[in-house]
Image (cartoon, rainbow, N blue to C red):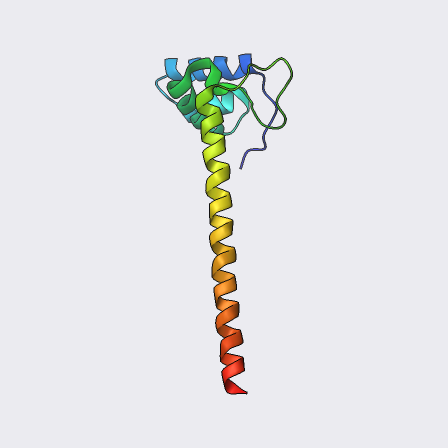
Length: 110
């Protein structure tokens, strides 16, 4: 397994373009630029879907100079939060139902 190294956006774009020019030879490109095979594959896939912006590293906190989220991104985030909250509420409800059932059983046995 290849250890990862830090790459800039320009490096990633160059690696992807070289890979496409070489006929999608991920292995030789990975060796040439000293990066992992899987990483090259992932970059090419993201580049095909979103272009240069797909290769940006968006991990961590949002930067001040970073563009604002689109309404679609905001909606997806809100939906994900609400789905998680809904899941947690269902789990709590099911737990309380089970607790009531156990308490009824214990009261009946006494």
